Length: 376
Ligand SMILES: *Cc1c(COP(=O)(O)O)cnc(C)c1O
Image 1: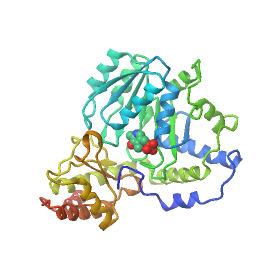
Image 2: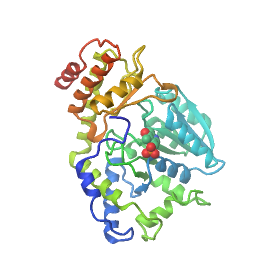
Image 3: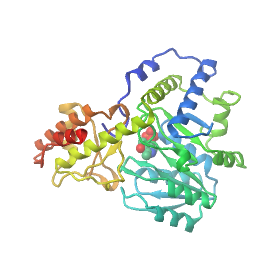
Image 4: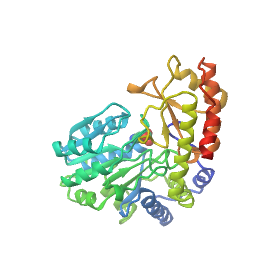
């Protein structure tokens, strides 16, 4: 129940145990074609250009930055958490002139702040983190995308944590390049990074005069391997593709909207429970992720000791904050297969016991408050 990797569905493990074929076998390209189509659905992308990159979420991030920034050109980053800093660092390494709009960790940008910054800076590329796993805050993308498109800029959206568990909907939002990972909202093991590219971004990619300096993540070469001439580029991790396809099928069977609703309900019940215990949420109501919850650590309590008790007595892993939030928040994940009523209730009981053992007196029963939230 941390910020990922999340629990993996047994069906995904079973799929990964199937015989490995070659990376140029026609059967493998049937699998990648299924993955391409299923990714279009979870991304909410009409684009044909969807693929899973060999690597984790950071490979998706690096592919987005490497392919869609041009050395010397301006890239604007909305920075209010850890992963925005990683995008900025990659932008600098690929030679972009990075300009940052900054806010304290956990405070999303308002529509006016986003539009004002973009109009003032006139970047070629804008990057934002849709679901900041380091803080638990959601950054809506619509205002950012509208402002960016009005000056002809492309938008990169980090949907690593949200994809598959919260609405991402790249077409409706206007995100040109969105990437994710297999081990968070999609509930598969770590190892693949889904990415989708809009028609507008594809035009920019085709118009590049020089190829990106990252050969391994060159999207044009990768497209030629996965979807075009099927020319060898690298040996794709076959078993991971079996697993991701199965994970995406599970999402399709549940139904995307039903899955979002499951995450929303479990999040609300968990928050009701945490607040009943007397904890305060770090992120303001209405701006919180459904998949990653960040209650503040109560005064005088050592978060590491509470977390150690949880894992030692109950086998439940959650994480703490880092950077400016080190020691200040707990990070409790409810992603994919981990987002269940059973987990919420079990967690609240275990958490209450661990807090009590550390000398904290809860205001009321967290479990009872969560049950009331489900019944409401
Ligand atoms: C986890 C995460 C990443 C990095 O993904 P890895 O799979 O760890 O490489 C990037 N952005 C966000 C928002 C994340 O939560």
